[in-house]
Image 1 (cartoon, rainbow, N blue to C red):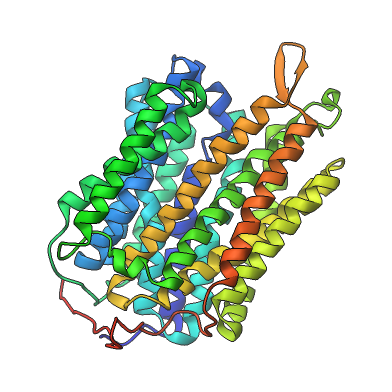
Image 2 (image 1 turned 90 degrees about the vertical axis):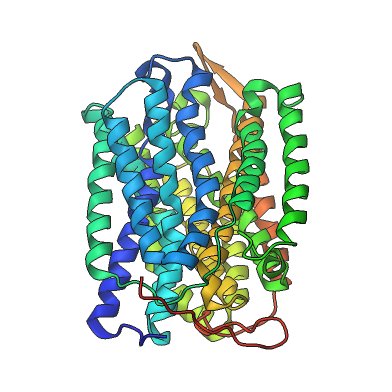
Length: 484
């Protein structure tokens, strides 16, 4: 294996990868401020316009594990550049049209960039010296939440003062910068797994994910008991069973299911679903509380831009706490960091149940939630890397990122359903009631409490995942080098 980059070069690598991760996370939330206006902007019904959001979710879920496997095989930097290039191309496509099919296609291409974050974390493991790895991974992990929080006020600012297509031009411009920085400052990893790409496995996983996630995102519109919704859920179960049976019996599988069944990997991935639910829950509840009119009896009456700026405080806290997370993980292991993060997140939601009458109440609660999520997000890659060989880190991190995406999808469906039941009428508008918001907060707190329990089951290890994990039988993984 080549010597790790050191000194200023290591800081440049970290900065370039973290900036690219921030860009990807921002891209996902830049469009949130215009969601209520999407039907008018793309001249479509509410149900059809929702595909602008659904397309990104589905493409990111499908492409993230695929790009991770391809990164392990052909080069993580190469796949990261391809992911960022797809995001830039998709952004330009969206910026050039208001026709729904074109915008949906562009958004699907944007979603392919989400795999850049786990690829960046894996590159850090391959390239950075052990003494810098923990803090770098924590910073990269924090970009997943911090970039999203920054994207909200930026999207609101652009949407308020410019044409909505400018949102995508901003995403394209930032993507180009991330692409240029990664190409200029980040060397390629020397580690390769070799082998052939598992096309049947990729097709099976993609079909299963689409059949599972599509009814989650569309169930409210289709009806949770409709034949289409139930049929897709049933199809996903059958597809995943067949896919798992085949993946266990072929060489060079897309997902090493035996590796994912390891205790540390399995528990971390399960906790990731709960963390993804908890983190996204704050994005659904707190902005509505801040923006609701005072006439509702609970609303704080802020503008979209003001609410986004206050929510960005939590994102900034994730960045500030990233070195703290690295130190805790290095001293006590990812188990302690993950449990601490889950407890903090649950405490933030519990506090919001009783303190939601002032802007500062909501800001404190959302900041505590974000701080806890930041600690948890930073601990997950370290926990995964403690249990997998270096040659499979991109695929393992990509699968972990997929688990978080499933958590966010579940949060969107469950919390939206809760808020739709408990409503108040204000003129012609139907808004969530105070009781509905409190129930949503309680659901999010319960989800994160599951993460606390799961984290307690992790083995106690020190270190941030810098060293190679032993394969079954105690054999150490050896790097496969390539000149590509």
